[in-house]
Image (cartoon, rainbow, N blue to C red):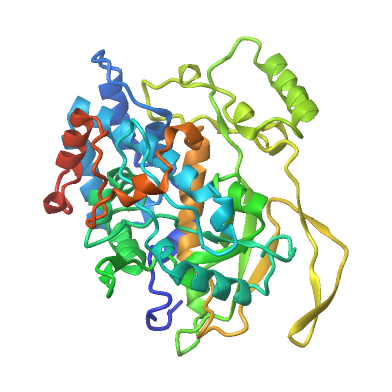
Length: 448
């Protein structure tokens, strides 16, 4: 199908086939080669994040040059670099879950997202969203609420928060994603290929310098925002559910590049279970579910987030990522219910409410806008990329970073330099050196 010419609001960020097909594993030859190295007795430690990404990614749909680039990078990596990459992917998933699902109540009413302080003892360089220093976030949030009729797009309940689909900004000044968030850069590169990372950077993360002397990215543009109630905002950011476009909405752009409506599909995303036998597994699963049901009103979700630890997995191979849990048996999904109360629209106003319906996996609904020019819809490719990242995170059993792992004070945020990098140097020096060697800009199209 021929697609209309690209439009600034909706340039293709992913290969079109990536929106139509499932996540795929790396070629079997690659995974066999990595597995042979892991089983050669050299004791190369890897993580569930590395195992999950090797089996769930978008690289099959990427250009041939990108696939060859990733293949060379993996083949030419030393044992230490494989371990460093594995650690980097784990940190990246935790960062994504934390910032994507973290709510700052004092800012929620007027800003798009929570500030992003640095992570203690991990060395990831977080920067506050550029828009939080001006009224830019508040303006974008107001526009997003107007577009979404002042309601949560899922429940149709008024008074939503505004969520970023892709929550990261490279920070202030002319800094690249590779410089300020090397873990995220690495994760995206191995997930979708360098071309997709370039496209995302050009679309959301280019920094232009304003009169204040620091730059702003486009991370708060309307195409990267959607309205969700507080609880659903957190669940969306933590990957408990995803919203994926049905088909390729960009194929339906009108001749002027406008997108007035498209269909999205809701899915719960269960965690994965190892195929290794775990003593007492069935019994412990039922006990955990019963305990969760008894205490779900007064216990935090983190208490039940991971059913299996790293030790329950065979991490001397990348051929078997485990199997998805049944939704009803996943303790992190147990008791989660989303109800949708469609409004009865008369003209431009909602006059009443229909009977609520339960939103379950496979439920579809349309995203609409009253004005596709001034209030553009979320970019479908951003929803697809978010869904891919969340599926990898859930397969890896990744968890958001605990609150006490943050440096969260405003003073510490303001200590960051104008180039967007923190004055603290917490990143492990060997890990930083490995990442710099593997992901250096001059080797962006060559071996890392």
